[in-house]
Amino acid sequence: MKQFIWFIFFLAAAAGIAYGSRYYPGTAQFIVASHQISMSIYVFAILFLILIVLFSVIWRMYRATMGLPSRWRDSRAKKREYRSIAAVQTATIALHEGRWAHAHNAAKVAAKLPQSAGLAALIGAASAHAQAKPAEALAWLAQLDGNDVFSDAKYLQQAEMALKTNDSSLALTALDKASATVRKHSLRFRDLQIQAHAQSGHWHEVLQLAKDKKWGVAQGIKDQWFIQATLGLVKDEAVSATYLRGIYKDMSQGVRAHDEVLSAYAQAMITRGEKAEARRVLEEAQRDNWRPDLLKAYVAAADENSVTAQLKMIEVWENQRNTEGKKDAQLLCAAGLLCLKAQLWGRAKANFQNSLNITPSIQAHFGLAQTYRAVGDASNAQLEEAKAAALAVGV
Image 1 (cartoon, rainbow, N blue to C red):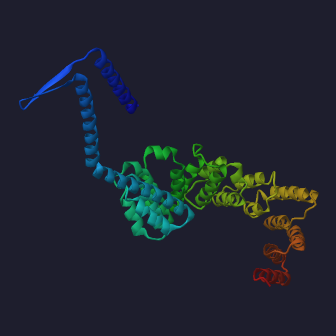
Image 2 (cartoon, rainbow, N blue to C red; image 1 turned 45 degrees about the horizontal axis):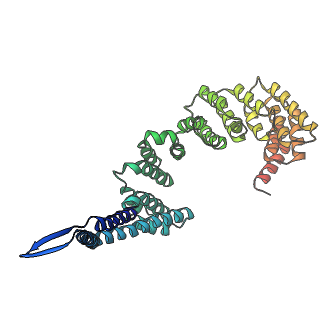
């Protein structure tokens, strides 16, 4: 556009000079050193325009010459910038590919440019930590001190590194420094937070985080953390039965389908004298799906007032299994153990023998031995104990 304007200007000037020289003749006179110079005013105008053009060209050449050093510096800066950007890309790819040393070296190149130094420091810290170089990792993170843009990323990286070295206290300290925005919206923050609490054994905090509906992860992941928290809390004798009931109430179907969790919950309630609650939960769990691994806890939940009702429930389950055409050795063994508690020796003996006919087990042999001892048959009791011992050692 600029060249076009100049072209129009010179074209108009030439046209004006041509028109004026034909219809409006005139002269321009100059006195230089007592000499009088006379020329056509239009020739003077042409010379003046030529002088302007020459001055413009000379001025441009001067500016270009004086600007060479700065242009050279800019060119070198551009090359450094391109090299650093390429190094950041290389370091990121190498980090995700597990090429820690390559990522570390590329991060050093990228750190030379201030604009990419922050990201390079994070990559360098992660790669150094992966290579078991804690001093270098801390040195990389120290480069981010005072950098508000990367402060949250620094704290999360510190927490992740601390967790990998089983220093959950340091991880929680780093996470406490994170901004409110990261606390509210970052899934990585929540993941690191729940890992740190789990590593510290803070199962109540883990449970609360797993129950948080705002945590936008798959339900299966929440269930896994809920399971870990529950297994940790049921072992704590300071946790009350009322608190445990609240945990069971908050369990999702995925958690309740986990046999280990329900068995641990039932055992915890039994320990706290809440056998009726344990029986209720275990019977409810057997309602839709057959879960033989819960039978051990069901037997442990028996007391002198509940054995009869439990035996009737065992009969119901046994009839259901028979209807399906399946004989269950564990169910018959559980029935035998309940009969032992009720001192129904003959019935206990029959259940244990039927269980052994289906699948020999240590528990059934020991149960049968107890039955024989209860009726004074020491020789058969010793024989069953020997069979149980042989199964235990794999003979």
